Length: 173
Image 1 (cartoon, helix red, strand yellow):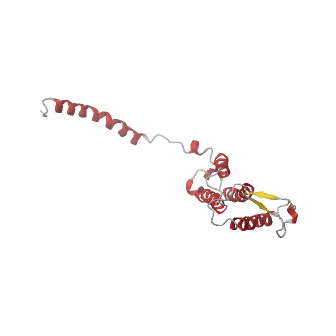
Image 2 (cartoon, rainbow, N blue to C red):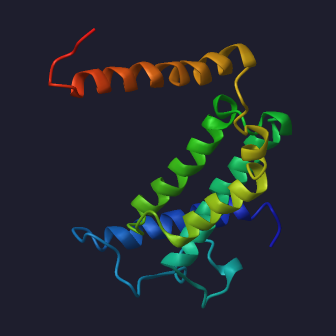
Image 3 (tube, rainbow, N blue to C red):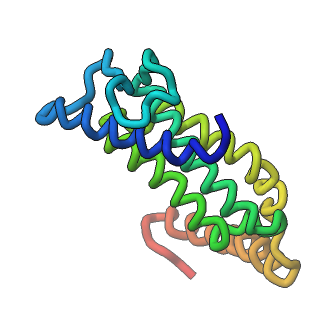
């Protein structure tokens, strides 16, 4: 199948799923054996008369399109900015929303294994080194030194206060 037929196929799949799900109106979830038949539909002959798509197949096709959109958006972001949340927030949220949207429309359930696999793959592909790049560093010495010295100086004062308070129940100076 060449790339020119893919948009037509996706449109056909979405139309078929919408018609098929409309037949199950009033249910809270799609039946487990639900499948989408392309027989008798206009322009379905290029797919073959016996082709049937399960709900899993339909969801797989639709979320693959979500992933391609995410890849296109990430291609416009340089690798050095992949770990900056303000830069990657929009593509990442759009991927998640797209996965959720199709799961909801197909009554497929979210989170699901396929959506989890796409998000995990995205983390491995784009964000694997982010924890190394953004690792916590020690604060500068002019901040670190007072943070260390303050509790050390407070300990003798607090010990003295406790000892004096514990003698006869009254503090004596």
